[in-house]
Length: 311
Length: 256
Image 1 (cartoon, rainbow over the protein chains, first blue to last red):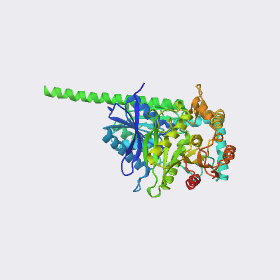
Image 2: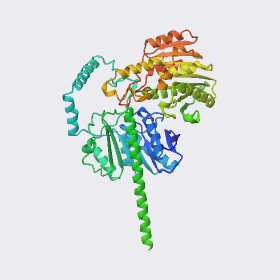
Image 3: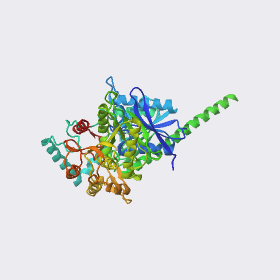
């Protein structure tokens, strides 16, 4: 049984504010907050309303306030980008703006950032720039195939009739589309010239080596990382793939990995929705516990030093 | 644009108010009623764009999330269709109170159109009703989802299924037995909306749309328009793509 939570509208910045919803309990003791980011162009409630449910679960069970907000031009925040900044650059500045707002209005000093897909990448980029970030939850963030992943992926398909059937239908479908470009297939993004359909503009993939450097930077900054991968991600085939892919990064005890082989990228399965939320709440509660005990330990050692100095 | 919570303390609803352009204020309000589930996610941007256009054209517009959806309070498993019809009533009252408008219209897409039509049947204070690609019959809609669940491909069986408690899970959103029952009781063909003018706008043609048009053509002020546009709302897009059916958005704002 958790604490009661309440939600309020938070307008961040002027003259074109970013629109957010803050979930918090009456007990405003926490100096850590969770910020949940947009994924692509989906608005702040998140795929399958997961950002709303997760924010309420985290606030209720840990007392940590949670802010979900829309980047400018996404959801209910008006566009305000100018001067040629890319979406990703602007997004990082806007997360920092949201952190400043929570610091000024709620006395928050530390932040955990949560992001799915493109949101995961923005969370890492923000943590590189701002030392107030102490933890990152990334769902289907960057990872690259390893030899074992290739073997698992192609080995299982070589003798699978379903895989061959799917391959054949893709080939015939591709031929059909080539002959019928106006059709496109309902809801697909295969045709480029559809004004009535909008997809997110994704940043270029920086590549494994650049991500490895970034991850090492985050580890050097002592940022805790909770990575969740889903099985519908064609590049991710086994639980430890992230560690193996980034074998040259010294994660120490800062990395926690979770892999849901049968979950879809946007968690349409209710069982995985619950599992993912439970996992994130527990990781955040544990992280906050570790941080508080470290903080208490530091305070104790300072007091001891002072006592020793005075005697 | 003003964002706020309204409605009963026990079930606060998120509302987004777009005030009318001051130079063109008609002193008329429009409450926009979202569809449900993946359709809601996919329609959010189109609704925002339409709300902005209508506000520029002089209307006071309120978008809102039903209880148990979006940013509003509650869980989906705890609500029924009659709660959502009641929420439309709260939204109408809220818009009247905050904007001081002389008249109100309702505009709904898919399931939102069904709810708006049912809400309109209980009212005598509406100027206009717009039903866009409406779910004509709640019963048929549930049956259609059930049929899709039965024929689902193996790797989607953990997303689309009926659980032991009878909850119908479809593309990431559950419909409780109470919701299924209450939706099953709603049918636009059995309602007579209390609006002076009614627009049924169809981005494609099907038998249910035609049967509704046949039934409502008896009503004074009814108009049916077929405007071909994208309309496949209820699917899972892992890239997070959304629909912006511009021909329909133009048609609606022009008609209003």
